[in-house]
Image 1 (tube, rainbow, N blue to C red):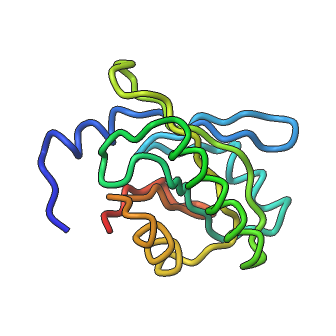
Image 2 (cartoon, rainbow, N blue to C red):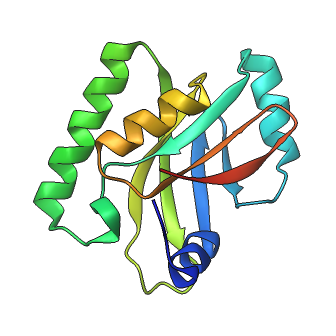
Length: 138
């Protein structure tokens, strides 16, 4: 998929907040988060992805449709047997609305891209132990 420099800049100007048991972490593209590595080692997680079903192809949808899509993604993650935790994508500028998402533990890179692509997403945030969070385009 091709993407514009403006779209990439918008995704990079986002904080990806993750609600883990007992702590909230703020992840950013290209920035290490040592507390996440500590948590991953304790939980036995090798890799992770942040995936949402909200606003496919960066086109805003209504609240009802976005919530329905997100619930279907949640059910899909349960059916696939992944552990996941609530997350949200927050635009630094506040221009783009907050998007609920999921921090999915143990999902391989290609599976995360496939799953997000099925929800018409442009990208995911992906990483792992000792890996700096990467913005991956679908």
